[in-house]
Image (cartoon, rainbow, N blue to C red; front, side, top):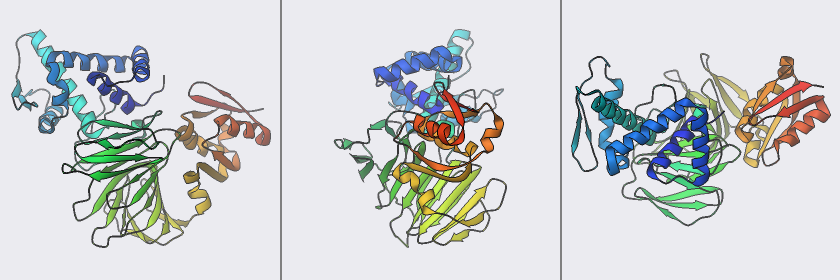
Length: 408
């Protein structure tokens, strides 16, 4: 069964707190039945909650617990040092070696649960099967496995709380860090007194969404994308972290440059409009519409773009500059994907981002077939497939999450 790892962990958090919907709970139970890793994680976290008692979720979101959990994760396993978790009521809980196997297992389960859950709550980028998690700093762990596939837009707050955003105009939502103003297709907010920290906006498969940042800048996110941002830019720079694709319309502020971080590049601007496609950390394309930007890869010299030009960064290579066609590059903002003389295999990414399905070729040579056309996000994927059938002699069959293509 194909599923999104971070979405599953978010559902586990909601289940632990008792805030999960019936639909999401049924989905989570189905995944747990089919995947032993998910089932084990769910069982251990539920066990940890039962051991810890009613303060479990408070401890999960306790900022001061973070350094202790990181120490646990990075400690030499043979040394097994004692660690202290400061709980919500400020009472230290010390984990020391136990002679009783039962007690030791219970405490180890609690620490595993605290570590996993805190990592999810604080950064949102924990992967299954023992893969390492990023520390809670300004490093943005990029991986396309971390997106919610379906459902509403979600805002993961710095304290671990999740806000569901329907995409429609809803009543204001009051949080400690900001007053949220969900509108039709976009989110704006008024920063509160406790506004520090990083928040992550998730846009699932098949949708797009805008967020108006505190400086008035507007970020339009494509499907299957996420943006990490603060509720207030209080430093010398305005910085955000992007995975996926977004169009930026940046408010001018010469004294506070705006920086967009991706897995492979950073884009530095003062006030301008540009598009960044960073679905893959091995290929990042920055396309400048208005103004001026500098794209930079690690410690290399920055590359300054002029309107109508784009930088193309492939991992392991120097940045390249080329012109681009706005009608094609920015078509996604109108719910369209325009492709001109492109191999059929390159459409796999947009089919997955918009419809949650993977293209598979029963005839491998079909992946190299050159095509021109438009895919409309709001139309069924079968419309695109039927056009392939009529114009290119390609037939298809669809399973739950895969599309198989072959020549007639």
